[in-house]
Image 1 (spheres, one colour):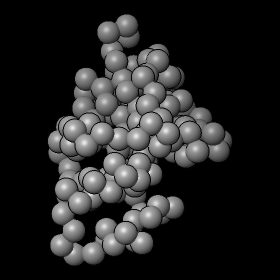
Image 2: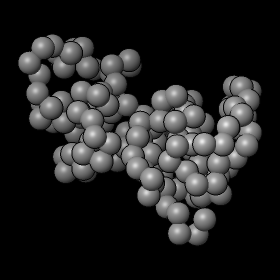
Image 3: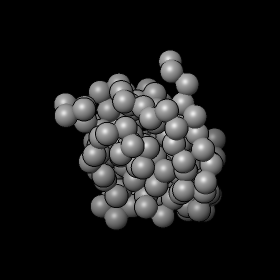
Length: 138
């Protein structure tokens, strides 16, 4: 897996994000870990990720535990440009984790979504809560 690269936009306070990071490592890849809540986002970076995923900014906006509602981002007529500007100002507004590999880019919720982006998928994986995930060959 030397040439297989992965980047995870990670929030270490999130169980799903921690599980996805562990799943990537279990596949034999040591990803680039970007703690976006600490480091923030650049507008062009977010626009590129959104384009790579083929979604809108609203599709990757996190509501729970964020200032989304207070900022009125859930209201009709809010544009993607407004959402992206809010995400730059409040990095926590971006749903996590986002994983990018040569196979694509996705928000990995539920965590098992990450297996569609990896090459060497483990047959079994135990999440931090003890749930065992059995991966069926595609």
